[in-house]
Image (cartoon, helix red, strand yellow):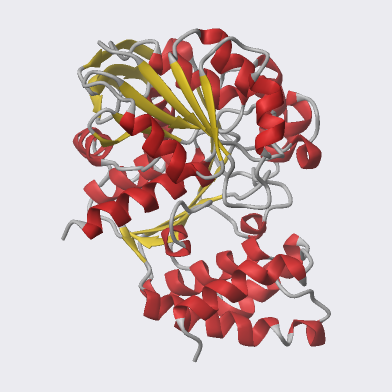
Length: 432
């Protein structure tokens, strides 16, 4: 049997030789490997906030006394983060065992007229085999890219959730909000309730029209549902009006204002499951106990990590920074991948006027924007800016220049967040 490192290496190399199967073909492979699932399934799509909605739903369901399987992407430090039972990552031993099962079938896929599973398909199949073995009460599935053609769309869920829709992955999903929304709407199944954020008129119209065709009950969460939002130290409290209850003083352990919307979607979805064990008290406690790394996460005192990686994400990040009550200076560590609208992201950050000093880095991935490209964009703005070949050097530079009351923000890509978290972990481990 392969070692965990060998399994990880094989999966990382899949894009070099595998094609993407149709949804129907992925469904055939899933049936072959895992058979039918007894768990209730929640399917989550959208541009921003998918992982956070999944985390809040997991918290609510666990507080309701249920076991929960969670499949998400991308990961920050290890592939095992993508497949969880409750808050526990799949073990290296189990990961390797299930990897062998999928690989064994994958190498014979051509005999069935199928392509070898893609990177994402492979991990999705592994997750579903794991969940079949563990048989959790609920499974939460986050789409990888889009929705209509996503591997996860081969399942029939009990409820669909669609988060904020914005401009991202336009080379695959379309250049307008309506086109992108149509791809996300592809997860809506006949008669299955759908909960979505009512934020942009174009996306709301598309999702509503599609749900009507599918005869799917609709729950919309918009500005009118969310009331009395207050940032209190490092926590947020707010009130929420849904079709079922009026909640007063829901609390989140975060300073990220954008999480109010994500938590509200999770509450609305939990209610729409119409499960008697999911009580208002379980919802309240589940939101408070929920954890999701890399989203305005204070990894160390005065060091905040946020995975904002597109225009809407940066806008949400800046709205939260504006309310941070920083007594010193704000410093920023920035790195980004090529397929993002990085010129616009840089413009948003620079024009905000929030940051006194910048450290800009290339990332440890072939997808990274080069330092020369980043220099060309940042040179347009009058902000003290230093450039580094790797994230560790950039981080150390800011740490050395950080005053006692300054805040360092790390933003621009989840690759960057993962690299900094791994570096912090190594430093911490070296102390013991």
